[in-house]
Image (cartoon, rainbow over all chains, first blue to last red; front, side):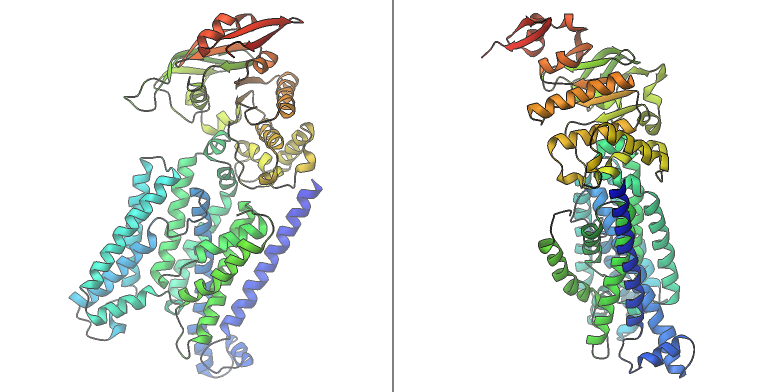
Length: 351
Length: 253
């Protein structure tokens, strides 16, 4: 029993360190950017002192952005973890059910066909991105990803959610969305096409307080649900028949948890665009650091996701020379070498 | 305790019956051994008893209750299972065994659940392994951990599918002894399949010979005869007696 307690204390310590890291990085991220604001100016502006420009930058631009990084990072990461556990597949990601491909199609449809075709948005790229309502593109993206999720889960229900079938159905349906997107882009005007491509690059700058609140509600609900189900996910680690023999309704667990994970991804991707790799790498690092027990790997994945996205956003804004470079590119550039180091240079294989 | 009547099961409507009007009954605290060739339907029978598969027709009664109508959780409090290919997935030994309490605690393990887990780990002599990762265990240790997890479920019936399948002779003896000890000390019923007929004779109270989805013969060790074995396995064996024990010799070689 003492050995178990010692391990729990160690895990608690690592989680505390991760929480502190999220807070520190959030502050660093908040005070970094293209505006030449000093750290103390930024700190004052946070508390409503200093020039109105500084206060505006911190309150209206930086805070929503930092919150988006924390929330979306956590959301994408826990979705990835839950997909990996459900499908017993280390390569599974939040996008395994074709969610991202469907969101891209929806957004492209909204941008290219609706804004460009019907609403004659003219030749300004910004008009294409916002359309009639700044949230319409996100809404259409979300509708299509939900459609895709329901389609795949509905189909897989016929085969009682056997992991191999789910992965294959995800690949098949995802590629249909990609093909449809290619067709849309082929017929798009130049301006429509560039607007669509820009949307595909994940960008935390699109976040507002409103989108942050919606994402926080969805990610928060998912996080609580997953933590409540952690023992059931633990049971799933030892295979379907063992899980069933300790009373777990395996196909119901798979259906609802994959639905929740995919909805989280759909919301994040619809508001922010594609931010790849967070959902694969962060859960792996969490499992390497703390083992596979979901009681710790869920919160740890969430925080590692926030950490990666905050770091990537800080870098993307310091390198962009005025405008931030796509954060999705930075997550992969930053994540891949670290990921490889974790895989190849850490003792013992718990992946 | 366990009463199976006319149980029929097929994997799809047109495929042949894997279980064909099967009848079996096991009394309280008895150790029953299921014998038969590969593909005779032993694992499928376990799956229907455990509720992984729904039979086409027939009844399974457990302590007077209809097992087929029981919820998963209720069933898990009464029947525990150790599958043929044990898979753990990287939790610690302690958490893996604690998982057996899941039907009781649902969301969060209580102090009592942890105490029961620790007690069983001590009884099985594996309390020094608690902080180890299950992926680092040897074959014998894995089997013990799997049995410990089944025991913390505090079941009335333990179902084993080939418990000695991948073990060396020392671990084989150890695990069989452990199964007998548990069955007798706790008064738990056991239903197990075994390939080795001599192992079967050493632990079984009652024997079920299965062929083509039916129990062809059953009874105590007096039912184990050369003629029955040769018919069930399509094999050529001889039985000799040594110190009141039957020993089965492979005569085909």
